[in-house]
Image (cartoon, rainbow, N blue to C red; front, side):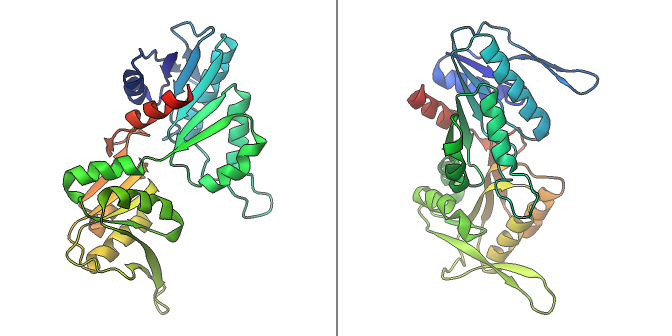
Length: 296
């Protein structure tokens, strides 16, 4: 078994290899003047089980192409099985067709990954596991979806949020907050968007719980612009919450997102190392390594 960290996940790949008790062999990588990626294996992968570790954000397109190159090269060089650990999978949010003519990008990307020679792919907190279940039968490549929410909740429990309420910006993320609540122990609930009929402005409020004087954590799979979560946090503060944390698996945080969250009243922003970010206080290496041991 060989663990090969890609250009996007050197540190995470090293941690996973350490948890598995093997050495990590990063690929040799550089960017040509025209923007193309160069990939070279520095160890023989012939007749080996190869575990690639390559997240797809930020700069999604480049990191996705690097993963495709790594996978095809591994198979061409004789790897007997290729497992790709892709903590943040690009295009997973483009999983439905809302308008005529739209591309179902997620399904296309799954096809490309399969054609590159990947036998199994391990992902963390996909946008929609239900859609994955619909698409999986059309692909031979096995997709293994994991969740880091319980790991994040454990970190928060140990850092001042034991007993805090777990909340989600919408009902569709019930799986996230129920998992978090099982660790934090404070119960869980969802926000309701309330729109002012005169101004059109929206506020976020939680019904059926008394949050006054209590701590809370707003969980989501991704924080990107931070707008929705900032409104949720402000709603909690307006209802009397003491401390509110913003927590997610993938801390993308586009420019201005941090300011929105802090202005909304967030005490802290917590994320994982599924992507390289200033907010990756929690590592998913142990969780991924434990799962890999089950499927190897």
